[in-house]
Amino acid sequence: MSRVAFVHTGSFFHLADLRDPAVRAMDVTDVYAPDLQPGGLDGYDAVYVAARLHPGVLARIAPILVGFLDADGVRMYVDGENSVGDWLPGTTETRRGTNFWAWRIGEDVGRRSVNRDHPFWDGLADDAVHWHYHGVLTHPEAAVPLVRLEELPDSDAVADPWGLPYRAIPGQSNTLMYYDADTFGAELVVSTMDASYHHGSGFMPGATQLMYRMLHWLRAAPAVPDAGGGGGASEDDSTSP
Image (cartoon, rainbow, N blue to C red; front, side, top):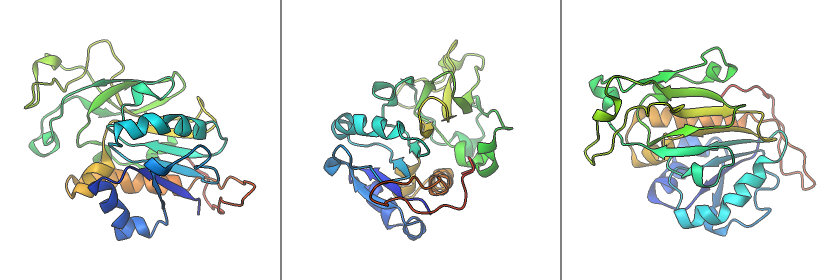
């Protein structure tokens, strides 16, 4: 299988993710972001950028992550709460509030799965992406939205306990997750759902589904030959997670 780097900053939930027997069985490599230097992702076929990286560390390693995207045939998943609008070319992010339990109480927040005929949905599921989110994205024209917010009547009238509206923003794309195979050499998936945070924190079952599915997708990346032979063989080069 492909060599997958799990890039993290050592928070308790990151360490819990790495201790998970299911994650260990996927043979991901622990990459501690404060130690990451230019060239440190060479030889990897895929990268999982864990949720909620320390902002100072993220600012330093962002050029390394963007540089990885220039390689042909690799894959990257950027988990939520990583301020992608500050460092990822072609993407902007607007913070939104969070109704943690809309999926439990049945509130329609306008969240919709879209472009369901896209091959990426072959390995994804609604309950893996319909729990909550922390922002809405605009993205490169070539990207394919997978989950978005539809505008509902009085969208901005509904706020979370901290007073932040969490419905769609009128006139914006309101994307919560997208797939992009054309902007960079890499295949890229970006989400404002912070799956690795909630999985490592031990709550939100949809987050666990999303994290596992993204890791499976990353492991299915075609092995990219390098001088050091870091990539492994892969039997599956599809876009399905």
